Length: 123
Image 1 (cartoon, one colour):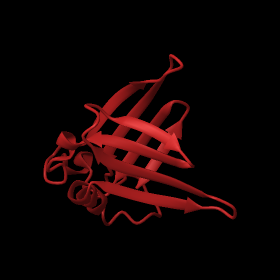
Image 2: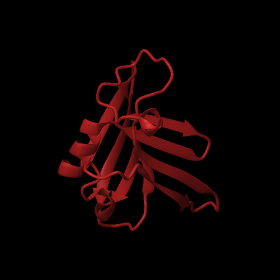
Image 3: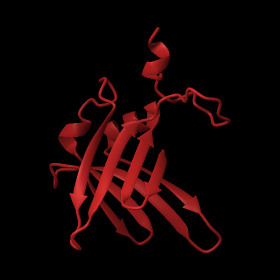
Image 4: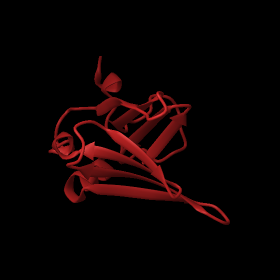
């Protein structure tokens, strides 16, 4: 799972196996470890919301995804889900959850579990 954070915008990208695990088990979580702490990021299915919602607590960003959005997401062509969450301070947080596609430019990261890039399939 990759996350990209820029100001009030968070984007989660999941590989094929990560999407399937999320759909099957209702949660996918990873960690980045530092000397004195751990930063965690998770995507979890929920019945509590009708749109994407994010929470940050105890060093963990959790993206909550309505159950109905995840139904068979790993089988269908839907790329992702998008929502702008209104915050209590009057600001907003842009949320994105997407399938991770193979990059079209050169990269050193392992992309064997990524989805085929639709732009590569076009003639």
